[in-house]
Length: 223
Image (cartoon, rainbow, N blue to C red):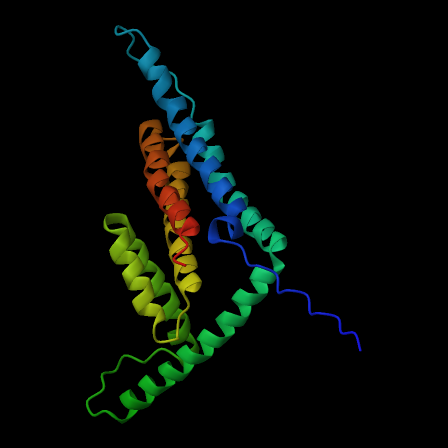
């Protein structure tokens, strides 16, 4: 009797491949931020010393602030379309870790409900607690990565050791946290553009470290 061997399981991509479109979009955004600032600073640098009023262009600051969220959302969607097997694995992992976090959150709520002297502040629901854990882990890892990536990696492993969080889940939450901070900074640049071109340019440049950190976190492969 002849048997047909099972097809090998598809290999899953490294994080820098899994998030390649996002990384490319973040890289383009970094360049766009620098270019927008240059449209403000360049004319000032080129003006003769005796010229007092210098006309600058803030259009690029406005454009980058408006287009960045859509650019990154589109990149995330494209990455998901390119790697459906990775997405399926991530969704399965998220369901498992979410269930584990819910169980832990419910256990904490049970302890607080029976503990004497509990304050008037209501506890988060089980669902809220489970979701906050991911966001909190991402924030903490992102903050630590800036000064000491090795300590940040150790923290990721520590947070994932209990089974309530997965390594990729933590790193992706960290990416989301720093991307949101960068986008909020660009939103401020957009607002400032009409009244204060120099501040708009400074804010465009201030967003760059956040997007650079997002690239590092999206590329990080602890395995």
